[in-house]
Image 1: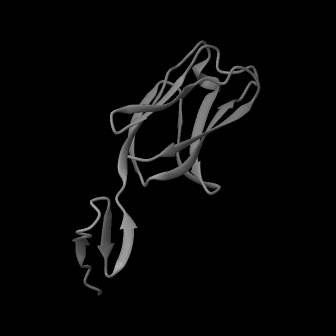
Image 2: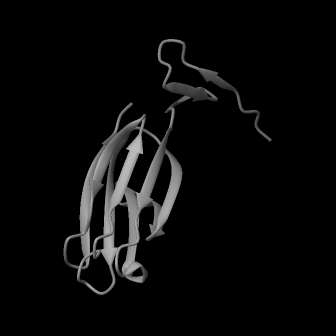
Length: 116
């Protein structure tokens, strides 16, 4: 079994090291998706570099930890007529960084960047 050593880089508050490897400190991100008129049709994902980080449905409020970087909020509607008034909001570091809806269609991509 390997021992894990952890230390904060004294030059940068947002970087830490585990066994000599540097990592960026994740931040808490809040995702709110309202329900709209047809919540059973709504789903969403957050992706980074094509990998799904988190997914969910309508009428949710969740918190996740994400490293600073570029992400895509992917909105889906199974029927294909948009979200029917439902919205999504993403906040971090006491700031709203993304707000919107899927106006029409089956899917939409909404890029956003996390940097605190």
